[in-house]
Image (cartoon, rainbow, N blue to C red):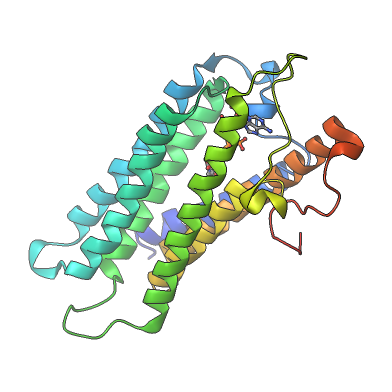
Length: 256
Ligand SMILES: NC(=O)c1ccc[n+]([C@@H]2O[C@H](COP(=O)([O-])OP(=O)(O)OC[C@H]3O[C@@H](n4cnc5c(N)ncnc54)[C@H](OP(=O)(O)O)[C@@H]3O)[C@@H](O)[C@H]2O)c1
């Protein structure tokens, strides 16, 4: 019989397919696409902090419950600390640095909490079960490659979000809320913050030996962010017309 890890894992894969299919004809109702038809909203900072901080606690709790002290390794704890750094940043630093965050629908917050609980659970178990093995064995090259990609992706994500924050602070004589992002990876793609995020979780999957939990997170991130990047890319073209750089792709430089 399938254990709870496998069930939650396949639930995440199934929801990735549902999310990808749904986002082909519907835009997730937050930020540029906030939509009053999706019911009541929470202040943006509160919403983000609520659903992202669930991940900050769910993964470590799941790891420590699944790995008794005698089975914990230093490598697993380093891997876990990458998760904690990412989600501490996303739950608190990002939220406080953002000049403003558009209101977030209660529905978005609730579904994100459910997903983040499941995702934190499978990733904590994955670190405990698969980890990078015993501390006495040399780590594979894929671990170091994954670590480098994770850090690079995180750097691109934070740098790109900083460019957007600077735009959000910009005063416009026309009262325009959104502007064309420039600089960094935005020269190549419309959603450089999403490109960084995808690279980060690709690196995470690699450094975790492409085990189930981390791979399902990569699948969900792609299912969620690629359609949203396409929607944002089209929105930029509609909003700024010929002023918008034509050679820019949506999320994968030179490709898509
Ligand atoms: N792993 C995942 O599945 C996942 C899912 C969602 C988000 N994320 C991450 O969470 C972060 C935020 O995501 P998001 O979807 O909210 O990103 P976003 O739509 O790009 O917005 C990021 C911030 O920049 C502002 N902004 C965006 N475009 C702007 C423009 N053209 N001019 C001025 N300000 C602009 C937004 O303001 P408004 O709030 O007013 O629009 C918001 O404060 C990103 O780093 C993303 O990678 C990850």
